[in-house]
Image 1: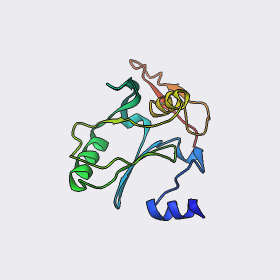
Image 2 (image 1 turned 90 degrees about the horizontal axis):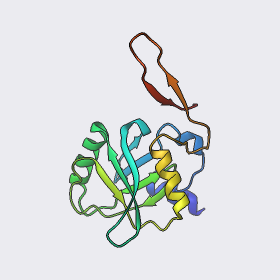
Image 3 (image 1 turned 135 degrees about the horizontal axis):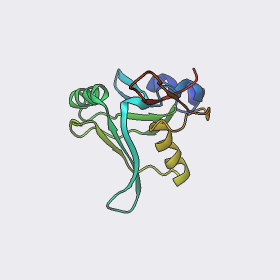
Length: 154
């Protein structure tokens, strides 16, 4: 019953119901009626960092398109909470105090174990998946190229 209430309230599940569904787009940002699901390839950097107070934080840098969405949405909804969801799990709902420009987000104040934080960074970086399915790399062997890109099962 509580899960259904949270689903109705936020528009998405508050827990990792179907982890595989989040493998392609593990990060969701939502404010009011706007939401964006962000793929690992659109996360330029995800890393653990230590705050001034000694707490661990997840620092995320977004690519141009999700960064533009973030700037617009946070500018429109100052004073409103924004949900940050990783693999279907609501991680934080900070109140927007000002527009977030530049696509850089830091998730602080999360009271998760270091193992969870490290796994979240691996998922956001594309090194792991929400479902635990292996991440494979494909190599383009066309003449003159050697790009590697993560591919995940559907």
